[in-house]
Length: 309
Image: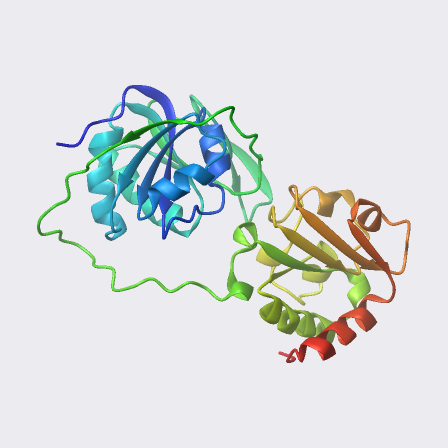
């Protein structure tokens, strides 16, 4: 019989695929008071990589569809006040179904979560709204918005044998197809190429997209680029756009205005290509290339044999 989690203020529910943690897993665990429930295949390996948790429950299983998973997890989470999921693809898929199974409200797209509600982004990320809940609730936390410090020592781990239905109804998952790297949502991308005003017009932006596909990187931009319609608004990085937290950020023709840098999170490596050696982006970069951004991009594309869109 499945063992329910104890009464907790909060717990992060993290869906694991092939032992890999989704974007935002550590942040969600940290926001949930360093408590996490890992469910999926390869949870033991994922537990070892979840650095921000002090207490971890694992449910090892081949993942069913999100509706069945919500029905199985709901009894385990009945005594937890705040159920928090990273707003990754699996988290966004599971969260509304889990909210229905638990008969709770869903506060989606949170940047911070407290006992009585959450601060969420609305209107294409342009407005921060405070939402209050009168009781227990489910929330999703946007990756890259808060960061997470590693917890001290190894977490205390409990393994749960969940009870799965013999004949699940509802929808059936036929398979899971991973997105191409260039199509990965910016908050989830490990590599990001940034287009700034110094990159030029649509031809250069299209070339940047071709380079991104070869490098396995998503393409983002400053507001100056999206305002021209060269890229859609959901590709705008900054305080009025999306927040990213990649391993590599390669900025072409970006000066580094505060509004843009405010959406960068904490990238592990930053490369800046700009003619101004004193601009903020070059100053914060691990590698600064003082040169014409379109020319550097064209040479990089030539060497990579990148196609134009």
